[in-house]
Length: 90
Image (tube, rainbow, N blue to C red):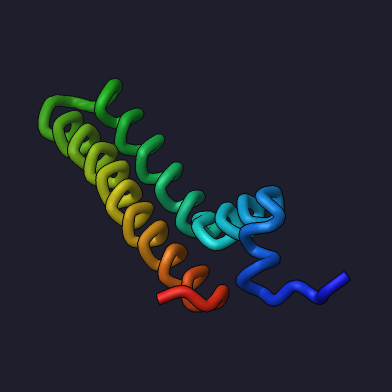
């Protein structure tokens, strides 16, 4: 049986393809912890703080979620480029 190259192996095994994709676009642990801390503190302050701090808490939590979503899109695009480059595609 012929030896498969990286490009052929990538598409011949969908489980390996999915594992490489998930690994490439996974968020770093420090980012997840930071976002969870900002969202939890912000929403806690949004619920229980006085009016000016309540608004600041809601704003902080919402901005943290939006930044995480933006970084997810950047990670997905970068992962797609890296995997295409690694497996011989343009």
